[in-house]
Image 1 (cartoon, rainbow, N blue to C red):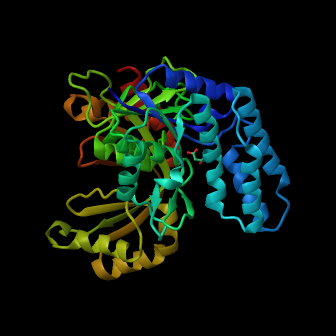
Image 2 (cartoon, rainbow, N blue to C red; image 1 turned 90 degrees about the vertical axis):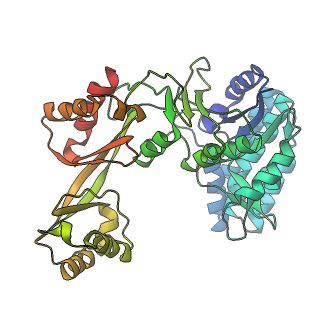
Image 3 (cartoon, helix red, strand yellow; image 1 turned 30 degrees about the horizontal axis):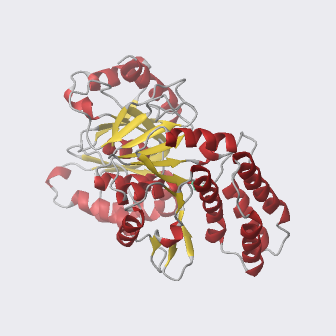
Length: 440
Ligand code: ASP
C-alpha cells in the first residue's frame, strides 16, 4: 500500500475550521497516515502566530517582565480550537508546565516548540491517530547540529507499524533532553525527515497557495504556477530568492528520491506543484520553469592583456577573495578579462583590502568595481534542448531597451544568469516572463 507523508503549515491549521479541512484531506486518502504539523499560524493578516506569541512570552520572562498577556492568548487559541473540534485536552496541566518553565528561566527553543507540540496533541486526538513526540525521535547532537542518521534510525523504528500518527514539526531534542528547533519554518524539514523515514512514495506539503509560482507576484502580475519542477531547478530558483518551502527540507527527500507535492489546503482539488528528481518521460510542459532574482550585487572587474597565458591568475584572484572571507556568486571570464560577482554587503567591510591586494599581487591593467547590479536567473531543464529559448530571452530584454551587464550560463545548463542594473530589475523580469513563460 502506498504511503504519503502530509505536512500542514501554520495557516492550514490556524483554527478549528482549518483543521477540519486538513482532516478531510487526510481522511480522503488511506495513504495519508503520517501527519506532520506546524503550530497554529495567522487566521488573518492582523493575527499573530502562536510561535511568535511563545517567543514573546520567553523574551518577557527572560527580562523578568510579566508574560501573562501573551500566555493567555496562547491558552485561548488552543482552548477554542479544542472546544470547536470537540477534543478533550488537559490544557491546564500543559499551560502550568509552560508557566513553570517560564518562571524557572526559559529556554527559547523549548518555548518555541510548544506550539507544534500542543497542536499535534489536539490534532492527533481529533483524527484518532497516535501522537509521537518529536523530542523522542528527532535527534540533535550536543553541539546543536541535527543528527540525520540517528534520527532516521529512531524515527523509522517508531513509525514502522503505524496505522496513523501525528508528529509535531520544527523541533527535536539532544541526548540530555534539551529541546532544539530548526530555523523558522522548520516543520517543512521535519516533514521531509519523516517522509524519508517512512519510505513514503510522496511528501505532500499543504500550504495556502496552489503551488509554486513561475515568478515573484510582487513583480509580475498573476504569474502562472509551476506544474513540475526538478529538485535541481528548485535549488537554483530558491537560491535566487524564490521561496516555497524551507531550503533544508529538500535534502532528505532528494536523497531518497521522494517527490514533493506543494498543495493548497483551501483548494484541495488543485494539483499544485510536483517537485521531482527528473521530469516525467515525454513531459511537454514549460521549457522555462521559472525566473527569480536578487538585487545588491557588485562586480569586481579585472583586465590584463595576455591574462590567458598567465597560469594561476584566476586562482590567485579567487584566493584573495577567499582569504578575506568573501564568497563569490558568479565568475564570467573572457580572454583578457575576468569579473567576479559578489554580494555588495559582503564586499563592504573588506573592499579596500581586497582591491589593494589584487593590485599588488596581480598588477592588472584595469581594476574597477561596478555596484548596483541585479542578478536574474532564468531556470529550466528543457531550455538547452529547445532552439531559440535563449534568443527569445535576449530579444525580450533588448526590445525593452535594457542594457545587459553580464551573462553567465551555469555549467549544469539549466539556468542562464543575467546581470542588469538594479533600476532595470523589475522590467527585465517582466519582459522575460511575458515572452518566454506566459506565452509558452
Ligand atoms: N511554527 C514555526 C514557525 O513559525 C515552524 C513552522 O511553522 O514550520 O516558524
